[in-house]
Every structure is written in structure tokens, then in C-alpha cells.
Image 1: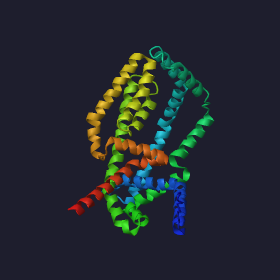
Image 2: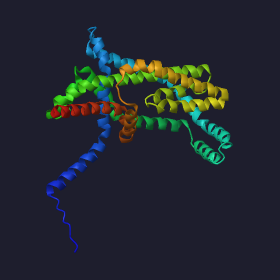
Image 3: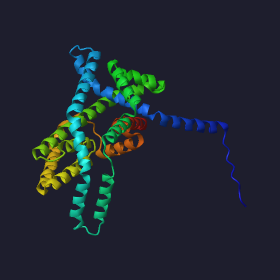
Length: 344
């Protein structure tokens, strides 16, 4: 005998489900704005140590913040007019020569690995690259699209600049911001949580920037001495990939070794030795000094956080991944402490 299953859904349950769906839809619509606000909070936190140091010399907070923004603006202009043109030119030339690189590599490897269709793969890749038209107009359009992706549009970029400036100028600006946006029941805990995690986030940002600059500079000097093509581009990749533990330095070394090998096989070996030396220098000298300014997060957690952050929220997700992990770790520690207190 078959039984009929009757499911009753109350009006209240149906209404709550509709409200939840609308809330999720609106969240996806405003995620760029939310990401911009959170990035502004992180930037304001990064500026706080410099502001406090200048405060010891009786320099007003507003003057310090304006000075910081002015220095960043000058550094940005110098980078645009001195480094960026060379970097763009090298990158475009490197992309144009990619078909030749792939053809040479596949020709050398096909003899040893004849069971793999390397020549077919190389030819298809060459046709794909050569079919792209790297005109100036398209380059400008690609740059515009890239900037739109990175900053989430001009509106988000303006939010980041204005809000980070406002939070930095205000005494305890982030704390006041949290008291406004956090429900009253959780207000005190949110402020206490931020005070504990702020310093860790600052140290991580400072440590990663310093590590990337040092490694990028060493790689650029080494490649330039050996007269390796695209030294600036390869050094820039090394600095960027320092964000990724373990695999980052390996990923940055591969294109450098390939470019050097195609110039001359012995140069490829020399560049391999250079990257190994840089890695050893980083592990035994640079990192032990910089690590004291960083947070203690397992590298695997960092990798997973960057992957999930990038997938969920793009550039904003990558920027906010580590701060989110720091805050989440503190919250879990608090939860474990409360459980331990109750058990006692």
C-alpha cells in the first residue's frame, strides 16, 4: 500500500526563504562595494604604525596621512614613467616570441618523448598566439579592462581611496567604523577582536611587501649581470609570486630558466643556480628576518585561502584572504578558550 507524503510549508517559512534569496542576490550585486570597503579597512590598518610613529614627534595625524598618500602618489608616478614602459615593452616582446620559444622547446623534447604529441601541441599554441593582434588599441583596451577587474570599477577605486583616507585621519577610525556597522550585542567583541588581529595583519602586509621587493631586486640584478632578456619582467614575476608559499618561487623560476636556456644552454644552468641561491638566501637569511614581522599561519592554509579568495571575489578576495584567515583563527581560538573554561 502506497503512502502519500504531505509536506506543509507555512507562509512564514516561504516568506523567510524569499527574503534569504533576495538577500543573497543583493549581496552578489554589492560584493564589489563590500570588497572595496574591506580593502579600505585593511589599508587604513597598514598605515596605522607609521601614523603612530609620527605622532611621537608631535606631527598631526592629518598631516601624516596626507604625507603618506603624497609619497605613494610620487612612487606610483615614478613607477609609471620609469619602470612601467620598460615592463610593458618587455612583456609584449616576450609574448610575441612565445611561439618561437614553444617551437624550440617542443623540438628539443619531441626526440626524447616521441610518445607525446609535443609538436602538435607546440604548433597549435603557436597558431593561437600568432592569431592574436597585439595592436596598440587592443593593448589600451586590455589595460582598461584589467584596471576595471583589479579595482572593481572606478567607483570601487574611489571608495577605497576616500574611505581609507577617512579611516586613517580619524583617531581610532576603524574602531569607530566597526561600532557603526556591527550589531550592538557583538560590538565590544568585534572591537576587541580587531585590536588583537590588527597588528598581525599589519605585520603580514609589511613582511610580504618587503620580501617581494628584496627577492625581485636580487633576481633583477642577477639576471641583468648575466644579460638575460626580459630581466625586468622576470624579476617582477618573482616579486609577485612570493605571495604564494612553496610553489611561488618555483613558478617564477620556470620562465626565467626557459628564456635563459633558449639564449644559451649554459645560461640556463647559470639562471637555475641563481634561483636556487636566491631561494637559499631567502630561507636562511631574508625570511628569518622578515618572518618576525609576519603572522604564524601554515603555508598550506595561505595557499588555500588565496585560491578560495580569488575564486569567490577575484582581486578583492586575494587581498582579503589572509586578513580573513587571521580574524577567523582568532575567533576559533576564542571559541576553544570558552569551551575549555566551561569544561573546567
